Amino acid sequence: MTMSTSSTSTTSVHKYGSRFGYRFNLVGIIGLAVILSWALVAVFAPLIIPYPVGEIADLDYFGPMSQDFWLGSDYLGRDMLSRILMGARYTVGISLAAVTIACFSGVVLGMIAAVAGGWLDTVLSRFLDALNSIPSKLFGLVVVAAVGSSIPVLILTLSVIYIPGAYRFSRALAVNINAMDFITVARIRGESTLYLIRSEILPNILGPVLADLGIRFVFIVLLLSGLSFLGLGVQPPYADWGALVRENIGGLPFGAPAVMFPSLAIASLTISVNLLIDNLPQKIRDRA
Image 1 (cartoon, rainbow, N blue to C red):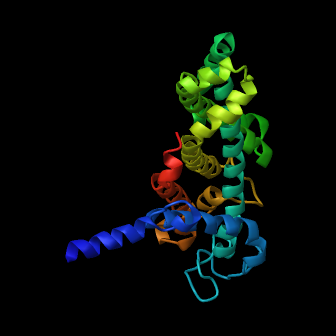
Image 2: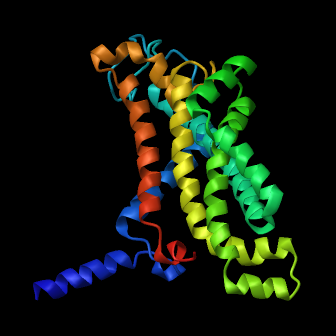
Image 3: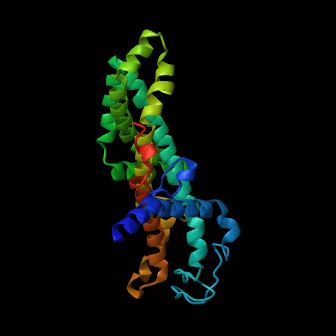
């Protein structure tokens, strides 16, 4: 009797979302809910913040959590809840833009190299291998320090850092697909390279590519936060979560909420993305 109840419970957990054609388990749904929550916050932050982000609203610096300041106040007495909500716009927005550019460019180049082969594959692979050999943090520090820190520069720098990895991953998948019989048949039919990439290879590597996109999003969030913590990321008067940690690091000996909550925001986003990737529906995972 106990085994039957357990089996029914497990089945119900694994069928969350099945009405939409995909089966999410409970952990995946929780991860997705947190990600969507931060995405909505990033979009609607100006409408939901209780105080203007630059307003000194508290007479006490590094103030504790209270009814007026749910997450305390920062080193100048500004409301931390407002600053974290607005910081989501920069952390999520910059990271999403960068990972989109990186994965789109890397996947397109990887599929082209796999299908075309020959000298084009060799040139692209060697060039991106050379770029990938530069440590990502060092490359980011050098570029941002040399050119200056602005949002477009940060997006392009983060994109360039992660294009080689996306290229290598997609090329490896595309090479395997390119060797299969249905690709040979399509070539015999006289299909173009564009058709092979768009209609034959991309649909068969889409699942792993989406999972890889999520992983690279996590890496970009962490790298952006690291650059901001070093003072080379988002610049004042704007601030992402990494910059908020750097600004309020002086409150660490006092256990100030102003230090802890931006760190928890970074952790909640990155962990949720990992949970969603680890619990993607079988229908998506098995497309390749």
